[in-house]
Image (cartoon, rainbow, N blue to C red; front, top):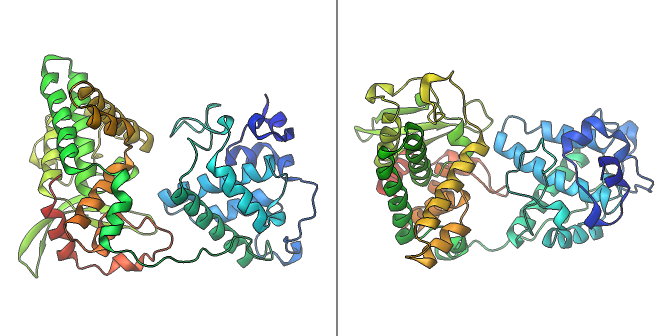
Length: 407
């Protein structure tokens, strides 16, 4: 089926969704829809230079171009929604009603197979699909929050007259115990965590009898998992990190030295996080594979190196590569325990790299660490929370908190 034929079909099971950038550059006819767009504002009143929906959507996305993770999250949700809106509902942005939003919620619960594909499938291949599987209630709620933010922007620039997505009623603030319960299905408990590290350490211990590439691969699996678990970093944040982002700083108030890491340089909301002794030891061990020593602190090479090491020109690995490394590590651990510990093996088979962040947050919360301190370390993830909430966190409290965690 060609891309043009996909847009002519009214059957969701036979529709093939398109990337937003493909729509923007190659298919201007897809957003010419025969309907009465009752919510569309008069063109002469619009404050942005947008001739159609896709140009208006792109203007909204450009507002967030300084923050890579936010931009990717927003693009993913608006891409899903706009494909559904055009392919299934045959509507434009100006014709969206609250009933459409309810229908879209049902669609997210069971997207057809033709809309689903492997997680992190390459966007520039024909295998790309906007969904991996049905979305959970939490993911559907997050999708609607993002869509509401998009419509709020379109109202503000007078592209549409009103926001068709109702503001979700806020829930009561949950206690720490309840927050941990909500994470329980998406984090790795401490006993299983130790088994994960043991499996990867055993793989690395066996690798000296193999090729140099096998050694580098095994050590990289171990490093990525340990570093993400002990810092709460996102995979894309590790991919973009340089060695000079990591520094030893002396705090005047305590006369003690702490290791820190600058995250998100050049982005809208950079932050400084703590790096504990376990993360540092993991980094030292990993870099020694490339015959470095302590003198590498402060140098400009990426933290995460290609398997060939420094023999290639310096460059960053992609977020997708970090994701693949993490998934490979989980698969190795799952296979390691397949016969000896079926329950643990199944847990690792189910886990995703995002679980490293939720594991960090869950264990920190179980230790009684304040929520705003945890948020400062891992970065605000909820669109409903203000960035200002973690900007005023006491740096000593943050540094001491992370120092206690040795995952």
